[in-house]
Image (cartoon, helix red, strand yellow):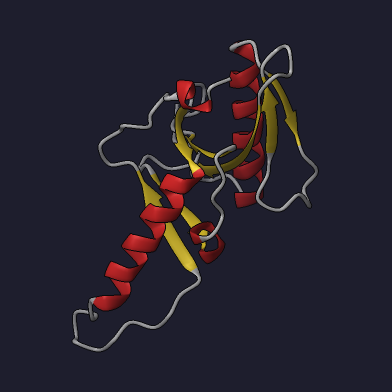
Length: 152
């Protein structure tokens, strides 16, 4: 089976949200996908007795490289009950990889990495231009399948 890299970006995002909702449901949690205009929140999840709930932003990549693109807003979006679930779709027919990361960790990471990037000149010595894009990666895999971090 091939890599899903040919999917339109909108479909990649939608697929990621449904995969996360399905995974949460299979773990016994209630998961509700929000309307498309709910900025920063793609899924609301709670435990079965509704005594704890979290908001989740889903970011999905269709390639094989565990790296996700975010906006500069991710530097400021930090709450104890807000999480990112990064989805790596991988090959068609296989279960995606999930990386569950607290929003405060993402905010700190993208801020630090962006500052490092902007401070280092390009290969030709010229300064970098400001960008609204940020990147997140979990190169050590410490957040892979870390569903327990949701504390549901």
